Image (cartoon, rainbow, N blue to C red; front, side, top):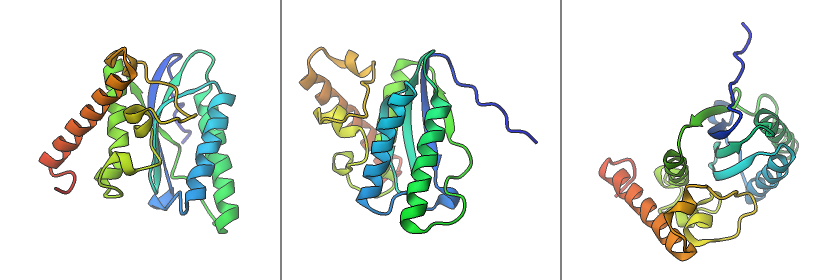
Length: 193
């Protein structure tokens, strides 16, 4: 049975998830994260896509990508996943499928959800008990938005800019939004107290 053609809007944002086959690790060492990040930078530029938020977990990646009529999201993801799989297989003598199925994509319908989805993916390392706070996790876009750290992958989330005209205030509001989210996760017992 043929695969259903992926529907990608001509303009908008999508939450993308790529997972290692059988939930296997995608990243074993720091250099692996760095290599994936370098490839993402290259392929987003090549195929005219925007990256608003990201989080690289051990066995999966989250991206929030922006597209327009000149973007080629499927080509970006195909090239990114293929090149990274080739790198990983050569470095670790891996044999067999590397990625689990095709990447998943979910349409983000409005600006408010764009920011909420960004906070959701940046909180993933806390929910997975990889760190106690998103500030301490190097492989996400959180510190760019919360503290203004440089990150060449990021194209600024347009809704983030509406939080305040002043960068320091915007960052403070963003940190507050994350704290509210983490408190809610604790209340729901999605993360340890």
